[in-house]
Length: 434
Image (cartoon, rainbow, N blue to C red; front, side, top):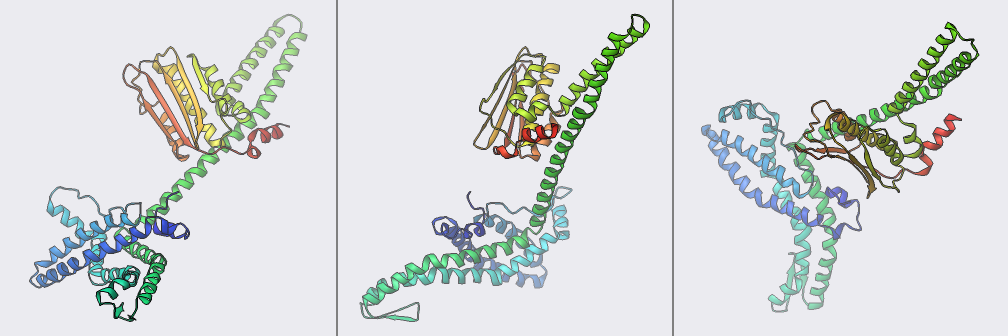
């Protein structure tokens, strides 16, 4: 995986010199040094005008402009852009924009950063470049300096006196050896410099990232708890209520056949038939909560079962080698397919549908297509909005293409890895049933 920050790149010291990160760090520091002198000049001029109260608004605007430029420059050292902390004015016009900016803390942080950048930071950028690149470059150039001096003597880096070409070439070899070594601290200092800029110019980013991570983890835990509860309810109904209802149906059947003809036998027959209908409805309810075929045999078998239950004929093309996937992934994909088939039967007017499922390169792809009238809108209570939210917890996506006249195509993509055999729920289910 490609590193996204210099700190990630430095964590792999063996590969670091062969990546672009050292030169990205050099570009970041060099661009800061180039911008620093003009920023200092503008700062001095505006501070001079501020005596007449003319430079204060311009100094204020200069801080906002420099803050925006620095946030863009951070992309040299971080692939994740720094968000703009400023709000949007509630009214058009310069006056509303200025009123909002004056009240925002981000504006004053940008002004403080501009003062720090113009007076301290860019000289530090220049110093780091001078040591990290200038020193090795001066040593590498020792033979050229000696030749320019007529081959007699040359002072390298204003300190090292070279009087012969062997000494000059030794200095050049030392410079070549120092260059890759100094790139490590240079990149680390550039990363620290960028972290300071990000902390001042996008201070809420770290907090927002932490909150997003917490929300994502919380959603995943809720989804896992919801799935576990579904399984518990299915297991309790299957092993408890259903078994007792089966026993009751059998008892009523035996009593019906043992009773002599008459009103009692008729009532027992009615009760027996009603118990059979309740048992059928309970089995359908259990299947809707969580089908046992999904737990025991996996997604391919469950999709084939859903296709068989569909009122509209369905051509199924699940991958014969579809592996066992994490339970939450299989459940989400199954219910997405079942909801799509239910919508086809209720709304599409289709004569036929097609269902495919494949897993490759760590991605499950499921497609449901029909030859109906099209024009499907997920926002009109089709049930797919909730499924999209459920897929989002798994970093999955749900998309629908449904032009008027059809065809309607629903696509589900969920990144997931293959589940190990040791974690298969079939074994756990069998042991639980035993």
